[in-house]
Image 1: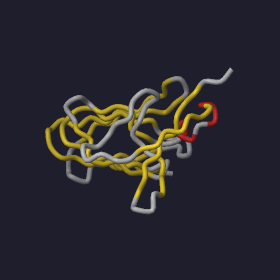
Image 2: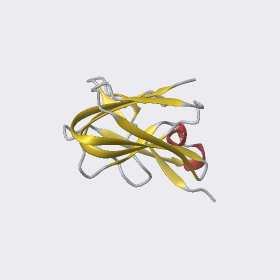
Image 3: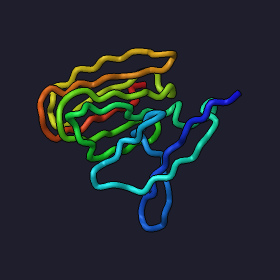
Image 4: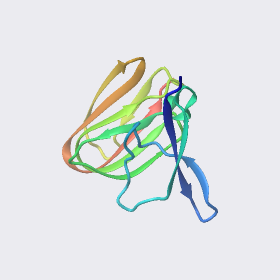
Length: 137
């Protein structure tokens, strides 16, 4: 018996090349207001690439996603608003650093849920923010 997951890709440039997209859960895709073109590939979730990638899984209702970019381990998220940003962290790194280059003081809480590393990053002031998540090891 297999459970079905999805790997999301976005097209980039005029050549139509694609890359993994790092802002989704099993049932949601977070889209920037400017929009993108996305393709969904259904896969056996036991081998899904998305299970081992660092990605955005929650953005507070008071926030608007403006950008997301990553390489599977490191992730950059841009948004306007305040509140919680929740992430799944790739198991390819044993530790991560979290920073906000716009100078915002952030609170970070890391947990493990059902064997999956997660982090909640809280932004307490309203504004345009960037979150950089980087492999520390």
